[in-house]
Length: 102
Image 1 (cartoon, rainbow, N blue to C red):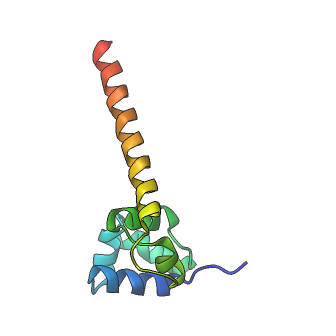
Image 2: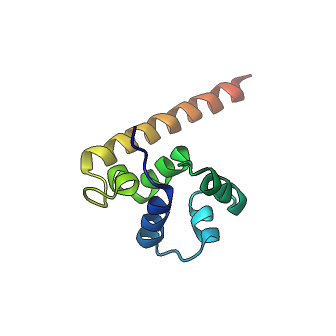
């Protein structure tokens, strides 16, 4: 199976987010520089971090992973992300309400 190339993904992140160093990229991906180095050493893609970045930047996952298609997520892709975020926020609010009642 063909896997995305981590170095290509990192270059697209640098370009899209106007970053210049690995430390800046790691910070933008919400990880330490050492974590990023570990992913690079193993040539493994940090999918969870990538998906989070795509959601925050409204960036297309196809573009970021494969370099194909539009940079920005479609309205439908963006809407799915917002629906998931809204649902998560509602669940958190409900859990906080239950905590207060106890």
